[in-house]
Length: 522
Ligand code: HEM
Image 1 (tube, protein in one colour):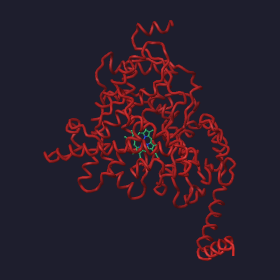
Image 2 (image 1 turned 120 degrees about the vertical axis):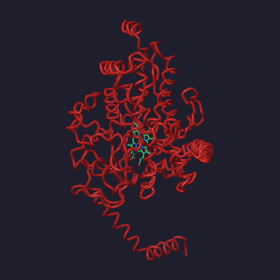
Image 3 (image 1 turned 90 degrees about the horizontal axis):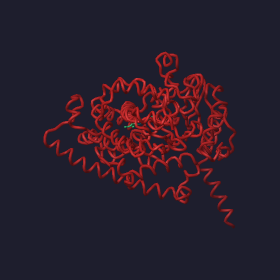
Image 4 (image 1 turned 180 degrees about the vertical axis):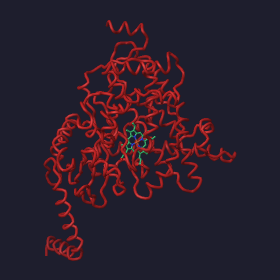
């Protein structure tokens, strides 16, 4: 008897043995497909889904997303289905649906795409779920106590001043240069110091191996998320991405482990001297200059965290806490470079608060910088640093009779929601007045969700706004910018973190009457 006979016998035996499971699987899959097929969406083929339609060029892909969103926004309560290979992704295109998802305590688990960053971040706050996430969220919330954030002001301020200094060489040359890498290194220095109490000095030492590896991990993670065939390890490794990812990962995680060890030794020594962590005493916190890591070490002392638990949380802050803010700041500079009248209003506000002094920026100053804040918020609207985020549906989710079956993924795309003219008149243009109180009150609160919302919102929101305001206040105290490329030519690339396709090409001028008069006659 030939091999095919025995294979046939094996298959029949397996089916006979597992018939109930096979039967349940087929029945559930049919029910699932039936539910999903009710959602409108671009055409899909078996196995490849809609990916065969995807434009290869990321910029063209961005345009394609907007085109599809425009078509499906007004159907099925703003829900449509995009098949990413064999996986259906339900996209939430209207604020009412977004609210139902983000406020729900049932849809808290992140989507499958987060698996690539899990290799780096483990199951830290961003990627964990269930009781682990709840426990960690409770544990980490005190780290964002306003006394702690206020104590970070001196770090934001110091790094902003270094940024101003390193930019000196670009000022008044009349040459176009890319501002983005400068602000990125500034944000990286800020997050290293605030989360680990460690200075990597990326602004003055850009070739630092840690700095370069963090950058590479972010880029490779996006390649993984966008190309579903990379989810198969043989292809991921054959492409070279897998090996490069692993090498960068080793370097980054070893660096964090070493910092934890060193800081842990210092922490235990101070504890032996009788010093206790106390966030309620503002003066004490300011003097001690805690990093997030110190809070984690104090919790470890109570036996609640291992070294590896601490590592995943520190790396989560590193991942979430610098690409996001640098994206926000670089786009803000880009927008203001294209809006001289708005830039002028920023100058007026800054001059009213600081005059021509070079004194540090304080938390009280930040409260005065209301127009700058509107510019930052408007930038987060047009170019949300996190362009989309996802949730895994673990039990059927009902919204006004619309059933999203268990097993589906829901995608929330601030990038699309924020450009809906129904919520933001003239939505594709930069206009800080969108954040005037009278406009905010007329808008659905979930039409604007750059930091997500509900129980899994961004824990670093206040940190981010304080950092961006401080750095930009220094930048515009010192410099005036002009755009080095037309607005429409520099499209946003909705990678894991939104980036400008051509960087941030600008010309920089010192803010003083003499040079401003000179450049205006150039
Ligand atoms: C402009 C800057 C920032 C933006 C736009 C932003 C945006 C977001 C968004 C949209 C989420 C939800 C992601 C999801 O559901 O998958 C999130 C979560 C998170 N963010 Fe941010 N973020 C920013 C800055 C920061 C900073 C500075 C930190 C830390 C210092 C931080 C730490 C986190 C953490 C830990 C989470 C996970 C929270 C949880 O699941 O409980 N973020 N952020």
